[in-house]
Amino acid sequence: MPGAAFHRRAAAAGLAVAAAVLGFASAAQAGLSPAQIHRAYALPRTSPVSQTIAVVIAYDAPTAAADLATFSARFRIPRCTADSGCFRKVNQRGDEAPLPAPDPTGGSWVGEAALGVQTARGVCQNCRIMLVEADSDSRADLASAVATAVRLGATEVATAYLQSDEPGGRAAYDHPGVAITAAVGESGYFEGANYPASLAGVVAVGGTRLTLARNGAYRRETVWNEGPRERTTSGCSAFTPVPSWQRREAASVGCRTRRSIADVAAVASPGARIYTSTAVVGLRGWIEGGGTSFASPLVAGVFALAGGVPPGVRAPAMLYANFRRRAGGLHDVTRGANGSCRSAICRARRGYDGPTGIGTPKGLDAFRAPARMRSIRLGHR
Image (cartoon, rainbow, N blue to C red; front, top):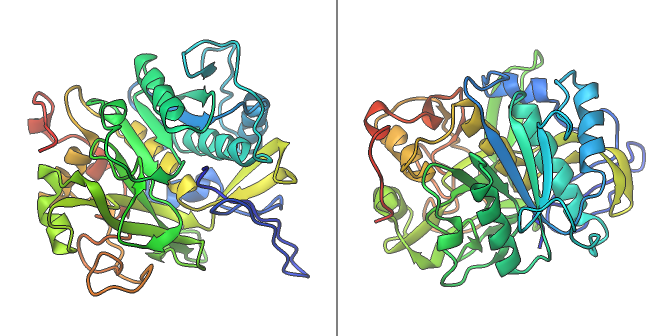
């Protein structure tokens, strides 16, 4: 299923219409702008090297290109069009036609496309954007779309869908030299993890509640927890062995033999201000999109701003190497919880914890490869 939800907010009545698992709001001024994201996380607007961020969804998002143009004009971001070669939309085989059938979910996947594409471009404003549309929301079709994105040259791949944690499927998401981000979900702590965030080859992205100072500067973050279906997920995978690069951190939260999620986190609430001219569960126009479906493409954009992942290097291994050598570049989230447990698998603390991983972006240092990694290959175990 898609990992996002959609809300219509009426200021007077306090009404909300929600679908799927996380957040969107209908209002011209709702949600964070790209400038607010850049300031909060001390990010530049452009990457020093050419990068292509792919967003993978199911079904067709027919107005993705036009909606990106409206978004770009609103926030004075350079246009990113198919004619210029900046924007590309393909099916899971990499062809521009035929595209998949329309979204049968009432627009949830269209919303995922708008949120992913516009967040990625808003964060990295000279990155090329690729939208890869799977034929369906099946595990096989979505994995095929990810593999196609990498084959077509994506340097970062953002995913925001949630599937059950099962054995297998690692190869489709195991691409050294490419940062693949995955939303952890919005169901809080449970004794398990969502797929593909549970895989060792991806960067599992959790969510926070971000508070800004009156002047727009970063003030604090807490674990995102705003209700039973709006709180970041954490847990231990039932099937993925703990990778060598995470053994210390996973053991510290009780995941002694299995992978722990999350790896990093970013703002889930408030969400991003995005535009859709195709109905998203009854909503059109300017809406707010949040949850870990917002955090995942945001982190993909941060990897792009940092210049991407060197060949042969796995993105999560690089993050943990930077964390252990205290490279900086992270806000340590130490407040909040996403459930009830006896360890930091569900409670924020200093250092690594389940809900927010090693922290949230604070500049780019944590997302850059250390010099010693630029010419070596890192394994999973």
